[in-house]
Length: 129
Ligand code: SF4
Ligand code: SF4
Image 1 (spheres, protein in one colour):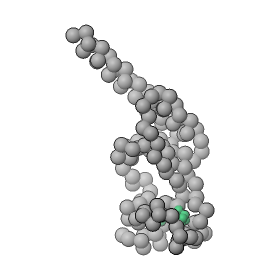
Image 2: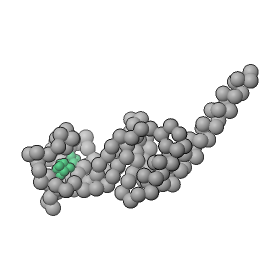
Image 3: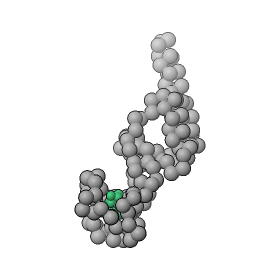
Image 4: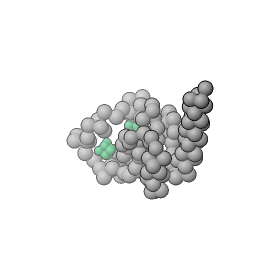
């Protein structure tokens, strides 16, 4: 579609910050993620096996007409972001997991612990053979 797509967009990509986080390995890590999700405007998602935290927050430079107020000096990350491979479609992401509320990570943690217990039980059984 190219950059003309931006003419028809509400600048979705200028309304958040997303950062990679370490994948959770322990119950404590999952508890920390639950804490993140207790905050308004915070989501956590997994894409291509990588975990991210996302803060919904509008860029200070976004103008009322949805154009960039510092276009010539906008950060590299904004320059590299390609219309057409972007957030325009809203929700068309190929997320493996999307956690928008604390209950979502609690459900995930319950499943995770269940799998972990089953794995341990299998390992114990094998050790006895
Ligand atoms: S890059 Fe995509 S999400 Fe960002 S303003 Fe352009 S069309 Fe919208
Ligand atoms: S600097 Fe410009 S392009 Fe980058 S997020 Fe802000 S408004 Fe959008």
